[in-house]
Length: 88
Image 1 (cartoon, one colour):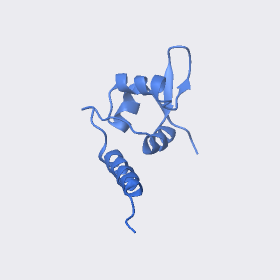
Image 2 (image 1 turned 120 degrees about the horizontal axis):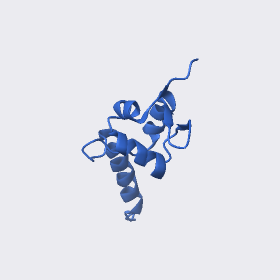
Image 3 (image 1 turned 90 degrees about the vertical axis):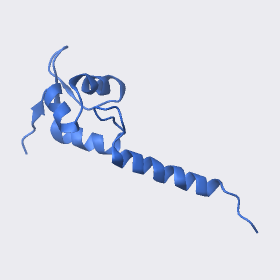
């Protein structure tokens, strides 16, 4: 299988984020990338897609994606159910 490497701008199109947000995710959240040189970064599209499925990331408007909101709501509901005392 051939590995496709894209720049930050094209990676942003895949994740619906700006180039600046992509570079922020590389520095702060560990977005997988390949350093060609000190200033040149490329991204494997498949690795980025897999990473985005397990990481909470922001859309261009700064709001969490719907799937992430649902996942967090489910976790919160489970925690609240566990914390409620059982009446005997």
